[in-house]
Length: 267
Image (tube, rainbow, N blue to C red; front, side, top):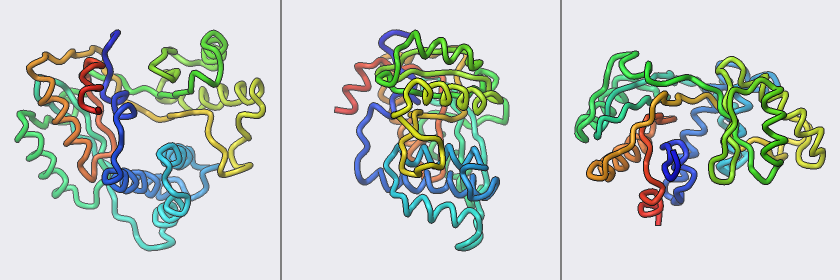
């Protein structure tokens, strides 16, 4: 939708204050811990950990903080008691949302989120109450400075991607959820072949920058919901407050917000 943005796109447009960066690092560390716990501490053998580390690097998380999180996850520095939860429901303006959560106390987190959501005119629903409005997709993002659109379209199509679009300064590639790694690997190999000086293979130099700005599974709405002007402020406040909760890792919604509203709130 021209001139509008989804919440997942808005976040990287908005400036991140130093006070919030510490909270962001805490969330990224949790993500790394759980990935290391479930698949081991070697990112070369643990794709989820590899993605978690690259996501942390993209936010300039210090290397020693990443290493501490890995050790915590593998049990080298103590037991890890985190559980993964998903919440879904309806927010102000009738928007549908899905929250991905990591917590060490599901009762506390559930109570806090329910209170936060209900105070702002929303409701938590049962599992499946709104997730049917979304598709689970793999998402890869590449800077538009890396390669031309036609060339990347050819590479992505041959790799098995479902769709390619442009959002601001990045290409957005969609895959089936089970195809994310195979598509990613094939695109990476082809880009490295065409752009040999851009990046070495994973593991040759841990400080190398990934070709991908983002690589993750997302909940993508099947139908976008434009926000009425009189609900815009309450929706933006709701989305920011929910995402700001310490245990919320990701917020997905069917809401689309006018770009000028993003500029107004981030200036």
